[in-house]
Image (tube, rainbow, N blue to C red; front, side):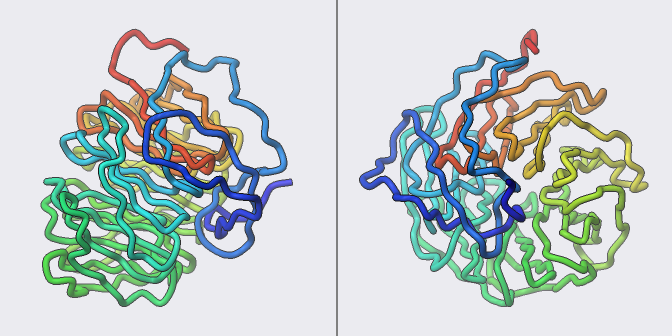
Length: 356
């Protein structure tokens, strides 16, 4: 039977392996159950079947091993040279995206790390945790530059504006906050959702902010005034992930109704609904040019879709647990995925003749 809620706390009840090192390699899934609150995609831990083979794309990823528990968030630096990951083990790791080497491990959070995000220039890294705080780190040295407090509950999502001047955060306290990333001052608190805010995303120009919630809605906000410009409805389940296309014209959303929706960000019209995942869609990400959309699901698969037609052009399998996070490199040649199997995979998805 399926465990409840994407954001149920993932405290493994199984025996954890000791002595994990930061290196490229392979990993095995660890059966684990938990019951509290924040970030697990609905998933059947009692069934540890292997990777699917029917219709999958024959891509051999680089696998990064080092986290001791589930990996909930991955993010590339703007130039694609580094990858950051946040985990239920309370640590953040920064990896060399080319070699898979763990460059640095950042510690300081007193709770699970549910979200990581690089600033556009790659100089800073933000993290959100169930210790109710946001931390901003020097991505080169690993020093914690600033700790932001103000949320009353778990911080499940963080996102920098394109110019790096502001940071947005979404929380289980149902609020969104916009912070001055240089001073740590809370500029504005946005309220209006009737449930947990699971995901926040700035448009590239920084004028709009999108949010997804367990109230089953998506809201688009004026990032300068805090006004809710539009509320998008249509999902039949919690909305766990939102992402703008690079030009800001479209917004994608993933839900526990197993569907992905692509919306006209100006009108709020649902342009297309993508179906194909067998379970909750916990993460969506556009490629930089907006031509492709990636999704990660608790069905253990990653899918890449043609964002214009809605066709599934690639299915990537290999994770032994739910896929909590997906992220394209800036040039769209690589895709990273983080999973409850404790691993991160980097896939070569450079455009070529697609196999299906």
